[in-house]
Length: 166
Image 1 (spheres, rainbow, N blue to C red):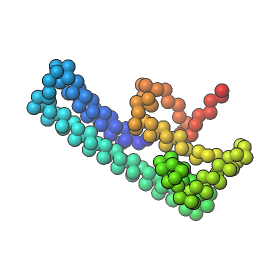
Image 2: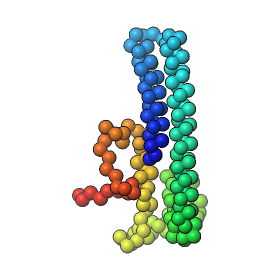
Image 3: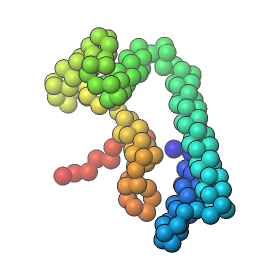
Image 4: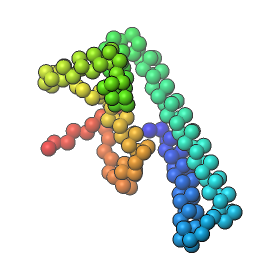
């Protein structure tokens, strides 16, 4: 994740904390907001919403830059890379829309990969490599369990799984 995105998340968390502190203070005293508190609460909410928009824009830019980097590296000319990209899109579509939301092409890509994975280690795999990094990123965005200080996070350089013997 980019440092810019981390900075934006910290700013958003600060604005939300301000809102929470104002709310809790009024609740403790069993009263509504004063005019100043209401103004501060609304300002913090506008700030948090603005930062949220900026965070989404930052993510979109990072994804576009990743796509551009893949194109520059020759992804468009490499049939294996094109197939992996198509499979990644099909897999994401399945996660978002379920099996009913898949096109016939996406369904056949996933079925083909699944059939290959049934052949053992020499076959393909159902989950695309690198998907774990995307999943962890989403979990960090929407949950507290992967925040620093709450969990110890071990990552490889590429974001792929760290094999741990059982």
